[in-house]
Image 1 (tube, one colour):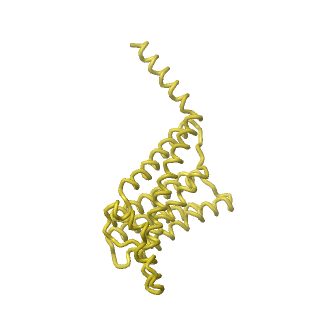
Image 2 (cartoon, one colour; image 1 turned 90 degrees about the vertical axis):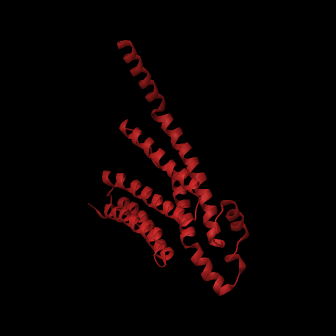
Image 3 (tube, helix red, strand yellow; image 1 turned 45 degrees about the vertical axis):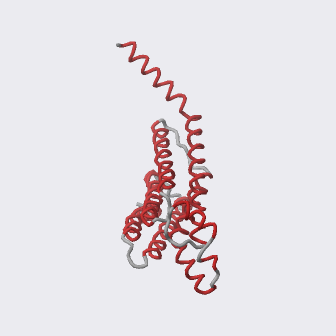
Length: 225
C-alpha cells in the first residue's frame, strides 16, 4: 500500500462524510460540505501526480482511482438533488454516462484492451468539479459578496432567475449559484459527448469482433440443435 493508494482510499472515505453532512443539513452544511469536497478533489490530483512521479502506478491504483472519482461525483450529485440545487434528470444523465463507460471499459478489459481516458473525460470531470463547487458554496459566497458590495448581481442574477423559473426552484439565486447551474449544463453536454467518443473507440477496438463472435456462437448452437 503506497501513498497514492492511501490518498485514493481517503477520497473514498470522504464520500460518505460529504453525503451525511449535506443530506442531514447540519449547521453550516454548505461550508463544511464544500471543504470536504475540495479536500477530496485535492487527493484526486495528488494521488495521480505522486504515482507518476514516484513510479508507483499499480493495478490497485488503476482500479480504485476511477472508482473513487465516480463515488465522489455520484455522492455530490445525489446530495445536490436532495438540496434542490440541481435537476434530478441532469444528474441521472451524468451518472448513467459513468455507468455506461465503466461497463464498456470492463468489457474491453476482458478482451485485453485498455480504453484510456482522453482529454474530453478530463474536461468533463473538471466541469463537474467546478459546477458542484459553485452550487455547494455559491450561495454562501454570493451572500458574503453582496453583504460587502451591495451589488444586486450577487443577490438576484437575471440569468439564474430564468433557469429558476423553468426548473421550479424556490430558493433565491445569485451569481455564483447561477454559474454553477450553467456549468452543470456544460458538464452534462461533455458527459454525453465523451460517452459517444468512448463508444466509438470501443466499437473501433473490439465491438465488431464481439458481435461476429456472438453470431458464430449462435450459429454453432443452432447447428447443434
